[in-house]
Length: 119
Image (tube, rainbow, N blue to C red; front, top):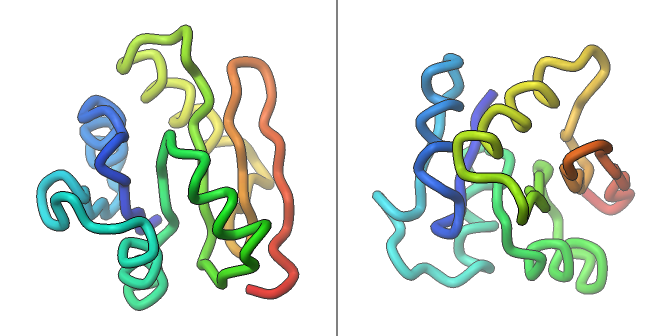
């Protein structure tokens, strides 16, 4: 899969995604201090899923109905960065998990997913 990891994503998450063979553009490396709207445009242009811990992306997609390839929000405040990375790896490996055209919120024990009908 192709991802654009927001600057707020721990480096451990980015490292794990890359180690698992995913193509990751990390905003902290390439788009330092870019606005969320700009990151969303880049992700769409490059056919990448957003990975973030920032719920502002959820607001942009749900409230503002902005188009997106898909987005994954990590809501794992009690886990350290390596545990967050491991949790995301488990979710991505689940049969049937497909974030395309959806907003997925990854929590410790569940994943909430909402299709973006306008994307």
